[in-house]
Length: 397
Image (tube, rainbow, N blue to C red; front, side, top):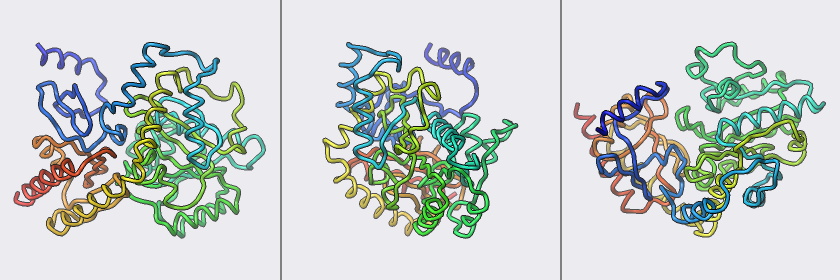
């Protein structure tokens, strides 16, 4: 009966995903269970979404309490938890104001609209936005245009005008900004979907210097890197500069749909009533999930304890690289890790799932692991026991 029901559901869904042949029905901490009761170690965290693990108790209790009070109301009225969440975000970042939405793509869409209206209000002669090759900013028409990957854009022309792309981490290419004179530059501090490639420190310093001298706004897309994923609350903190705009989603709501676009006052004031909006953005349930998630990060001192886990993981990853010829490179930051292979990565993802471990790819030959920030030593050891085993199995083929 269950199999027939699942087949029926699948046949009614648009085929936009290559879904694994399991249905996940329960999660707790670092583990999930499928419809047959099989337990998996989840080192995907819902693609960096369940940063506190599955169903964190503090967030669960806050949502249960909110469910008994109010699920939704329009943004035409004040929402107290939304105000509290916005304050917590701004107090702990370099930004002044927040717009709430439902996803990372919507947060990036809001950032694109904000810099365009800011530019068109007389603050720039050019409304062009520069992004970088191999970036990923979303699946809406504007954000896939911002995405510097032809495979994502294929079939959707005509694309939105006003975007140009430069190679990532290329120092000399940044000089083109002086000729382009865009109103904004949009970048990921780590290109997650593009292969887990970290921005080079020297490259970022030059980019920031040019943007400051040329009055070009800087947008950082922290949809995947935000909320302590890289070891600091936001990844831009590793690079010691202040962006003008930042976008968040994924880990902000512990799995509940919420996105946010943060900006400094000078830029944020370009949004006035009627310029942008979202029916569900920051509604009482979403804002409660976000507020409880952030409060948990701070109340558990997660930021002061996570580095030990990061160091342990990276130390054991270096051992893996030394042991297995299949592994070419380990890259990323914190708990956003790319393992570059000599072969295609899909085979390892399948073998891992057979061993009850969930991992991801980030391009054809990169394994991406995103353990929850709450992962413990036993779970780390379990991951490496399985991962070393499947690497050896592939090497023997």
